[in-house]
Image 1 (spheres, rainbow, N blue to C red):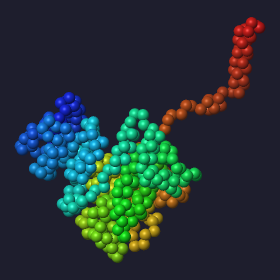
Image 2 (spheres, rainbow, N blue to C red; image 1 turned 30 degrees about the vertical axis):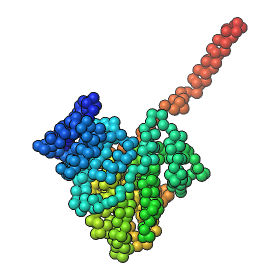
Image 3 (cartoon, rainbow, N blue to C red; image 1 turned 90 degrees about the vertical axis):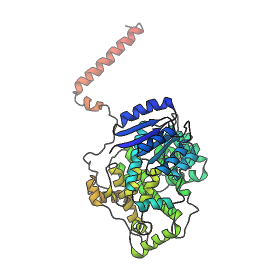
Image 4 (spheres, helix red, strand yellow; image 1 turned 60 degrees about the vertical axis):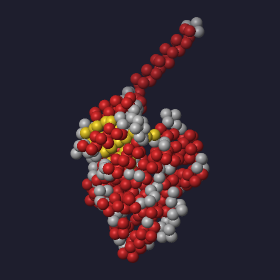
Length: 453
């Protein structure tokens, strides 16, 4: 369906090139551009829109004031604000409010992806019960400031592991946690790593970025420790799922990008539990009791109590953070992947499978163990892989992975032809003659240069 999109940008020099490129990239959108907020408001009186995007700096108001006014008059409109991504206070206000965030400078492709993500989330979370629960939530975990520092450094053209390690080392709790993850049994490193810079080198930039985000988000709830819920246990489960999903991605040769994506998705898949337990402690205790007494899945118990599950709330939060849609989709569908659309079948499948396998191996009396959706795995061409993946995670020797039709293959650098294979095709006497002649000619040349021939 065509989306009606209004964009307000107070910079005339920027809007010319930006509008031209966005129109070319999004031919299916009805795009209207304005240099000021008042003109856009007047336009909306007769021309409703689906999406409203505003620059923060406008000649007649601020972008946040304009979007707040739009929200009061047209609450159904998806609202985005464009501003410097390192204005942390503004980002927090956006995430805790109803506005989505677009970092400046903003490329047309980023706008397209952000709008598509927001529309998809609205489709998933269109249930009134979910929206009413979101309104009741007082505290969403915020994107940590250290994450922005690391992100800024990684975007630098001359970034290095040393500089990223120095940023992490400034936060004792963060550096301790990163080193703890690296030195865990998952990595089986033969010696203890104690230097954050070395940890960054070994983990890689993408994994460090994910860990910084997730560790600090979890740490925001250190003071929220109801006796019936262990945040530390949730963190261990999340890291185990992340590691398992990445192992499967590498085994299936899905490429480094997918491996990084499923790792982050695994870390974030249960983040909705943090939101629910920190905002509704008493009600979440009821959820836990239903699980223990009735043996029902936790997501069903959450639906009974809240009319929404941690999977849906987690997807909502990830979407508000502006993170890639596959991460939100993996959180939303990790218990029910067959409801998946078409955006990221590998990410959804691997996080779902990893969550099931890790849950099967956890000793938690009275806890419902989720079931592997074999029919879904077959639908996305991972049929009959579940037991192989269980063996892989358990450290057993799995059968060799079969290449799935349409499966992305990892790129390998072409190797030069081996000289040995060429040499073997030439008779030995010819090689001897060639080498001897070459030595004879070199010897004569040297003697002539010395005046001895």
